[in-house]
Image (cartoon, rainbow, N blue to C red; front, side, top):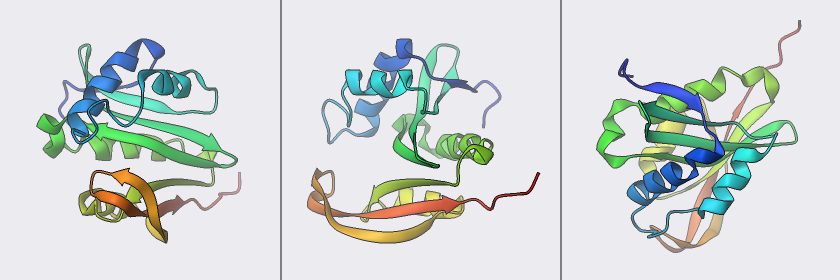
Length: 159
């Protein structure tokens, strides 16, 4: 990652910047995947880990997660399309992996048609646990699109 970029914890004041990146990353959804208020909801939760990659005050990529029991769920990950080849998504995933001792696994849903995202998660040690047919009712790749549930498990180390 470029030395001028910095990973920071996201705050509610970043909600507009997050929706801006979402609109660029997910052009098929004119308002992004999540509404600004939904994003703020994640950002104020005690059981969420939300990070962004900034250059000065500009946000280029983010990850929004939520702890569900002892497992961390990736609700959203997006990168500004102009910066897709800079491994920003990988940096965000590696940031989550650094705090692995706080949970048993990280999991997510991804469209079975989104092969680039699936390859990214596989590269970071995720496995496809199950395919859920017709998971997305209206998705960028078409109606009733299937989703892969992907998970990265952690082995507990004795202290």
